[in-house]
Length: 192
Image (cartoon, rainbow, N blue to C red; front, side, top):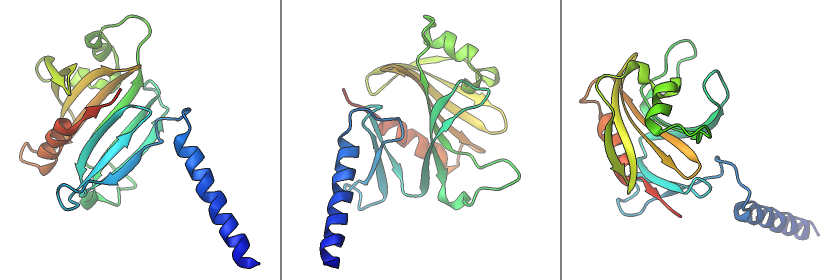
């Protein structure tokens, strides 16, 4: 009898997981991370079906997701932190990271460039140069460099109903995180 209840519990758990993963009403955080097989497990592939995007990143990073509710516009964040920098310091600045910030698209008709110039999270006030038009996985975007506590490269673009900032922060241009950021940018894909 106890095996029956154990099997029934397992079946209900699997059914609940199936219904949850096939639900069409999902939040940003409902993502799937799978090990990519093409390089013997040295990278992971992040797939977020609600956001319709995916990217690859080295296993040397810890991926975390959370909602940001602060003085910045509320948004969803995906942060890749080098595993070598963990645990994070309790009192002090965290390490350079690769960060994807997803903001609900502005509804007031602002251009992407205007949004960047008026949104604190873009680090536009730290701009070191100009906005350079680029294309990322077929999507028009702008790329820029900024300098603050860390050096940073950011690519900003509009995807679906969201404005996305994809930033890589570093201390020195030779840091591995710089090439890891560029690899992530190259691997970024959008689905329909």
